[in-house]
Image 1: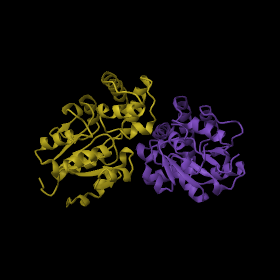
Image 2 (image 1 turned 60 degrees about the vertical axis):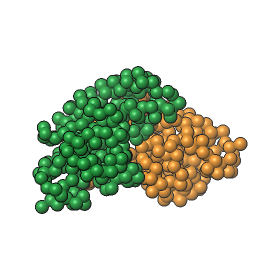
Image 3 (image 1 turned 90 degrees about the horizontal axis):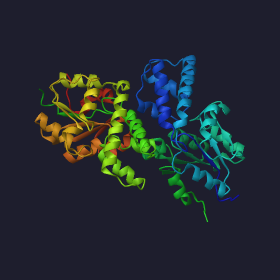
Image 4 (image 1 turned 180 degrees about the horizontal axis):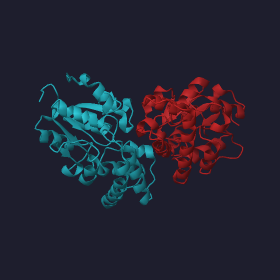
Length: 225
Length: 225
């Protein structure tokens, strides 16, 4: 294990897998069931937050009150719709190469996502994640992203101080969590947010995707040879 | 007709209708037919350009050469896929109110889009566009957006100098066209681009959608009472 390699905490959706747009479509369809009409872009900008946190905001914008039971029902419909879309979800360029790189250099790394366990299990089948790599899901913490809890739990599972971690994510919600943990946030464009939005949210560097991050990994102070 | 109201040239997709994400999905599915795998975000950032202009760029990034026949075939598949999604496309908040406002204040206005005529006819059924309002489609010009041709043609149909027009669009491609025409560009977030990207592309103002634009229309120097 090289001490020059910081611990990495990785998001899944939009970071390792190209699943953000499928999440947008799933939420949109689920909301239609309740006759709630939200434009795609507003949903897109909230993907990466847990439904429990993003629905109250969006409903408030529509002048509707969030009802805990309704939110739970919507989450269930959305989850079922998304599960059906998983077979079509593709691995983002460079994701598995980046995971292999982390293994090769002996990095301590973990997965931390807002998705529920059932969904995450399906998604992970597309990725080369060794069995001993900690995976923290939305089911493991009381409050999901943008609260830092799942990243904090992942750091604990790795037995590393949370502020030493490098958090890699595609959304401002990942970067807000990084900010609160005093960790270094790295943003990726692969979820559809813009460079300016990620920088504004505190990304120290922004790359296109993990392929681009891997091609510039020395910029994180990691010696590769 | 009030001389204080500038002529308006309006984009459709992402500006009046919530159709950008359906375009992304249609392109993605069409490309899969040719075993071309592009992440959603890269396609999203090119929606609003014509396929003839955006496919060569994207294929070049993949190290593939663009073949005119292949591009034409992909366009056809994409167009068929998108046509099937049109029934589910919704009107963006405020779009028809904004069109009614333009009528009420006696504005000269036109529609200018890269979409083909057949597709545009279907989309326009969702909007209150009077028969005498000029509609310029991708079929009417030699080069579609981001070339300014369709906006220039729309200004000509209105018999107004192109530089006096206000162009309202959701993508940097609309704003590039505005820039080249020396027209005023107004950006909308409703297509999923960020405020910073639209400003960088030359948007003088950025609003959430046409509802937000209408709520602030005096900021364009238009007297409403």
